Image (cartoon, rainbow, N blue to C red; front, side, top):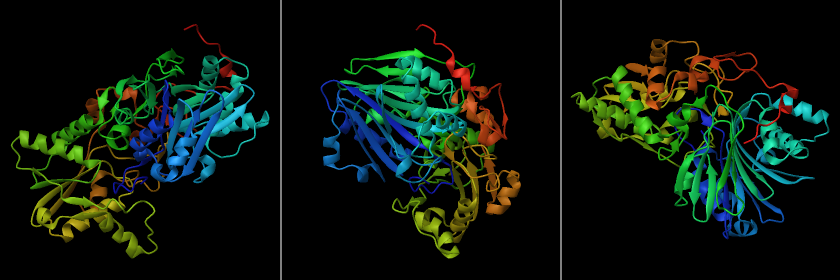
Length: 490
């Protein structure tokens, strides 16, 4: 997990931010905003600013607090800038793919931060390489940057962005800086989140509204799928261009289940409220009248709260308790050289409170099960400290297929639900009962049609044309010359 969370849920690629301010340096607000997005990536952190004359960049491996010191922030001059935190799911795990990615060319300077994953990155890379572009990394972000830089040699900013959107295929939320102008772009299906905020002296873009909150800003709205937002360089406002429109969106439901902070708003929903509603629906669909309900920290907490509340509303004697204590200092870099150490890992990360569990029937609420290893260890751990029964309830449907949209998820061979039904999985993890939330319940909790969600990891059918996979809608990869289409007057 990118932040050392115990949960077996998948990990998400990145967090992006951009600010445009009037008479105020951008570096420190960007730094604070990246702290608020740290949960979205811990591999590297970076900021690029522009002072009206030249671009300034500082990108380092590691956490935000380790990547920057006071001197670094003071060197990042300018009132506009973009930032990025990365967890790698495509490209190398080294500094070559750390972002924002910067490039200088005839038409000026360009910085780009990307959250998501292209499914045709290699095709576009080869096309650009044949035209003379030299690449320094194997990541898809550099592909987007080179394509956009090429288009800026021939088009104005708005047309160049639309032309690039017509060439790349997949999920992307971008913050871009062209000289001292900051822009935000969300892919036509809106797979990854991006929102607009008003802050003291200007405006900002961010993956999640929590980054706006940390700057005492005001959430304005989500960036629409297929929309380009251009922040005014003086911080006075922003312009909007709807460049691409699709009949349906493909919002990632796992943003609400797992990735996003519970205090963030995404696509008109407060994540905390959605998770509580998912927990309530979990009780409605598969509630079991146990003595105590335990969340797996941290993402299981809101699910368990809603589950227990729904149980109590129906008169069930279910008590919500924080019965699993998390060690926040055991991260994904914990060295496990032996099988004994691997088996001990869950005990190092989670310690049950014996008095809460001993002699009781326990329901454990988690966000997902991917490989099943951790769930197996957790069930055994609770029984070792005296739980009479352990029932597992999962706040998402079974994960049966990999994700190609920027989520570091296991292959089909590693997914416990890919070849087994729920009873098989229950036996494997040795739980007394196991139940997942239905896809219909997820859609209802989000207030969205299933046709507007990306459900590829739980159905095996994707909202994009991915080689070797099936799609649940009428989509196609962009043609090489399809990007030549004009742009309508806005």
